[in-house]
Image 1 (cartoon, rainbow, N blue to C red):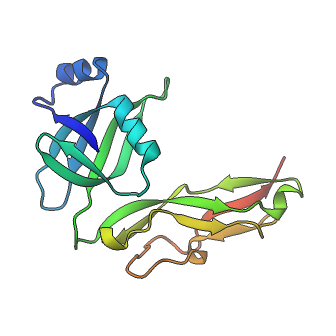
Image 2 (cartoon, one colour; image 1 turned 45 degrees about the vertical axis):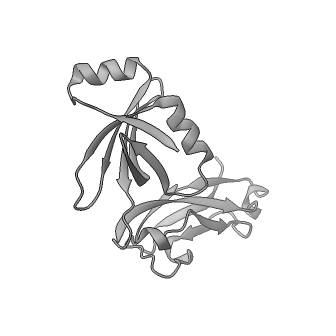
Length: 178
């Protein structure tokens, strides 16, 4: 389980000191819950994210445990280091918006016909309770030829999961290489 510390201050100087010491600044928030200003060791956080099996993962800050999901993160534009992360509490019985990642399966036919696979969206915004939330959406792209796309409406949503995006938005597709 990922363990972090509670930030005593939210000042710029204290934040810089934590970053120098190898910490990642985080905010943990949820509906009708008190916001938690936390910091995690950057290496531990990245290791936890790479090895997690589910979208929702547990963290311990101070003496409390939270089930959270990464809602947003900020990267340094030059070095690519993660500077800040927002963690949303996954509260049982409460419908919330989550960003669910896309995974593709297969090799498109269009790659042999001088096409290039393009991801229009890497994550899809859905509304669901944490217990019905899928860890990812798997899309079979083996039948895609040049000019073909998989749209939001082509993705089968599990029961209890709603997507409010426009159904004609493309997710992945094969375009002609220049």
